[in-house]
Amino acid sequence: MSPVFPAGECNLRISVYQSSVNGVEYLSMCLESKDTDKNVVLSDRSCWCLFRMSVLNQKPGSNHMHRDSYGRFAADNKSGDNTSLGWNDYMKMSDFVGSDSGFVVDDTAVFSTSFHVIKEFSSFSKNGAVIGGRSGSGARKSDGHIGKFTWRIENFTRLKDLLKKRKITGLCIKSRRFQIGNRDCRLIVYPRGCDEFLYDFDAIRAVSATMPPFGVS
Image: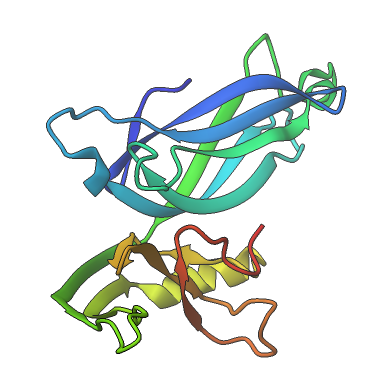
């Protein structure tokens, strides 16, 4: 594991290890969130991050290895956010350690990550009053709840331009959690649209945190 480095409200580190996937040995690589400040409430710390993890080729004229991913990191997994994102099958070990590959030279390998953390602000207010009750037959009616969740993302166009440059489609940005009734919910934003829609536009939807968003695997 690498030394810890800051990314928004979180502290991240590169983790590299070896895994066997379907009988094939792979180099695995991921980003992990690591809390270093015990005085901060962990559940309040999170950041949404688009990141690229790379293995640098030390052979002149050869290509580096890159893979892109994204997600919301948190200092722990109590909020339902990620503490680790990456790949068990980043690249085959045979390609990584091959004598002519250029990734390992003089028993030295170079790993790097670049990342874009969105600058965001969110607030949630709600009316604690419950609208509802029981009908004359004794059947319970659905409770009503009144509230407002506001989520501001700055430099949104810059993120869209970066996604277009890297030819990334179907990506979604997930907000922090907020509660409607007894359900944990989030806003999900697709900066370049998603497969459910015919056109390239900003698609916004709300989902329960207990249900997977469509268009995302």
